[in-house]
Figure 1 (spheres, rainbow, N blue to C red):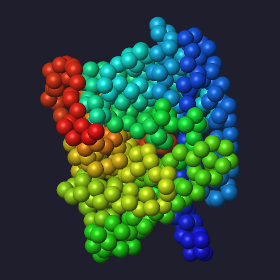
Figure 2 (cartoon, helix red, strand yellow; figure 1 turned 120 degrees about the horizontal axis):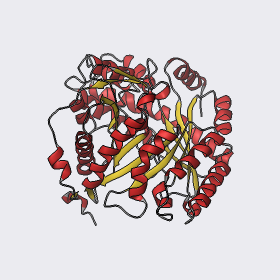
Figure 3 (tube, rainbow, N blue to C red; figure 1 turned 135 degrees about the horizontal axis):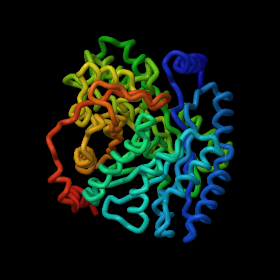
Figure 4 (spheres, rainbow, N blue to C red; figure 1 turned 45 degrees about the vertical axis):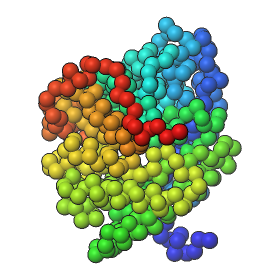
Length: 452
């Protein structure tokens, strides 16, 4: 039972330490919307989304008022659209993107994810057409997000897809160059993508999920940083316990909101993703947590070890607070969305290679990283391949959300605004990997993938 101290502590976390619910995300299956007539399919898609999610935003706002807990985003994820596109070949899949945008506008949500394809072992019907349409789809829409899964521990890495995605990311930037290259900021390339991820831009509703469900994604880097600051002389294992206890409290709030939303919307409660997801707001930074542990600046030696400690403690504390933990769960390190990461990148302490090392122990991967606009597509593919290799070998989800800043060079800033923040253009190794990427084929799955 909550006592007065617990209530006051939660109020302080919300008011002074940037505690919030990052998102409530409704997952909706569109498998029953498949139709060989793409226009009819789009009507079915719009009708189902708007029917299921018509009360999502209002419910989120009501919970905010009821509990006094900020819910930053209300979102929708849907079945990977490539599955619907497979039924209507020779049609432009961008029609689905337009239908998704129309549904997002009607429901009033911040983002709608699922303009996606799963090609980790090869391309099936609908996949290629959808992937090739991604730049146009992201240029024409404002709230639609896209993702492509190109590898997994069980299947290896589809290098043909990796090569293709390098070109797609660059083309998405070029098509939105007049809007701060926002296109690739809504596009994620995955290895080991999960089916119940509530976080954009990588969210989609997996085929193993129920027809409709509600997910919650919590946040709270400021709360963890504040807790650590109270114990400046704590040992490493004491720090781990402090973080675990704090993560428990944060996750309990997510559990409360998820259960309430599930009841109000009359849909099953999916998962609580207990990831520490930063925002551009001062005091809401994962980098500042790492610096609170004793680093002069995020990116210096010891950063990966600090992040490993943080990620493990968050998971251990959160899993005790909810039986619905899922999604990605851990610590996110998106550069443009984290004030501490931005500062570390600007002063040269944090480089792309160090970020790559950190992704071996964090929640996802290279996230919201801005690079020079003249980066070759093959280099983008090489970065994706490296990140997928980390995910494949370590049996974890990894991802790349890279933004080529067309017309900008290292040291310039790209301003997205809102939750996406702003990012400094980071330097990239200039040596070519074109020959390797052009070989095509598939990197085989590692030996430890054979578990049956």
